[in-house]
Structure formats: structure tokens, C-alpha cells
Length: 135
Image (cartoon, rainbow, N blue to C red; front, side):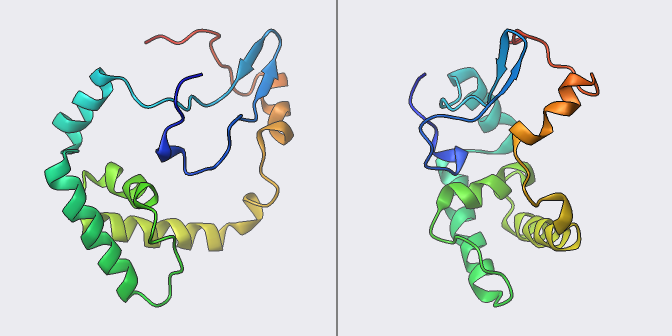
């Protein structure tokens, strides 16, 4: 395993996984390849000139919102919401509000959620995973 990406938002050194026959299903922790970083620059505007001010502005928006308690000190956490919004801070702020509203409304679905407890989905062929990556 390569260097663990800071964007995994965790301090783990080994990942939990789900054993499916001879195949172990796990997240990949490595930093993205250069080809993936190029796509992020081109399609998501993910450049240092855009990312840094977007993180700062999103942090300011969240600091002003006294109802939310979020990890403002973690840039990687903020980037997690900026990336799908193409680094537009207001859109990311709105996404965070919707994310937490969903978690509050549907809290029963999050309690005790772990891959090891969801093996029945794979055993009953509700979800199938190919054993090899396509790219």
C-alpha cells in the first residue's frame, strides 16, 4: 500500500473490508494518479489558485453559521464538499447544510453502519462487485 491520502478523513492505517469469496473489497487510500489530478484541474477547477481561496471562504461561511458544528480546521474535510461543487464555496455550504439535514432526518439509517454488518447485500447478490478494476 502507498502513502495514505489525507482526503480519507481518517487516522486509520489499515482499512476494514468485506471478504467476498477470494476477493477483499476495500477502499483505496493512495493519493490519486497524475491523470486523475489532471481531470480534477480541468473539470473541477481544482488548482491551488482556486482551492485555497475557496477553502477560506467556505470556512468563513461555516464560522458565521452558529447552528453547525463542523471540523473547520481540516482543509481536507472542507475540500470533500467543495470538490463536487467545483470549488464554489456557496454551493459547498448549501451542500453541507443539506448533508446534515439528511443525517438528522434519517439518523436511524446511520446507526451502527459498518461494512462487516452489510455482508448480506453481497451474499444475496443484491450488489455485485467485479474482482478487478477496469481502469
